[in-house]
Image (cartoon, rainbow, N blue to C red; front, side, top):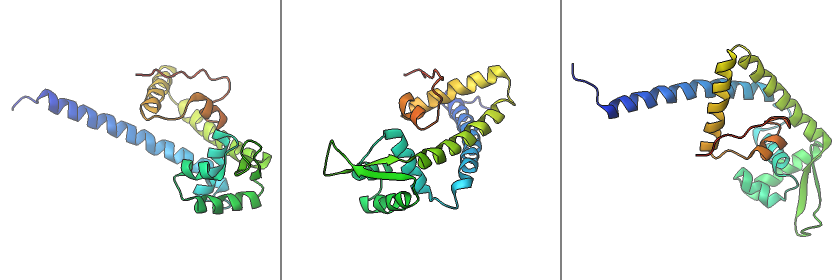
Length: 175
């Protein structure tokens, strides 16, 4: 039987790593889906995404929101109209730029996002607690490095969205 080349071994190793990440991502997608289940009846996915973007970027104008959502401004306008009508988003004059209205979360909008994130954090904590402490540390470190490699948002943006708590000291290595 011919010996496997180094390149073939590396391809097999990468394939195993991809399978592991895909399995974990399936679990995380399940956690994310369950965390939004309570709001699915009242919000669409784009509306929830708009709320998360406004929460992470602070007061933002509609054109910037549309760009962040990667949708046409008219689509962002429709989402925002519904969110304003539902009392989750507020539109006010922007003193810094009178041509644009500033979009901000209302207390109800922040409460809704807080609930989603609380459910998500609780579900992840439950899963992590089934693992040995050393494994949890390795998973957290590896996923932090993965997030950096994927160009995920900064810690400040993660905190403002509820992805990390104010007491977390997350400083993933940068390569």
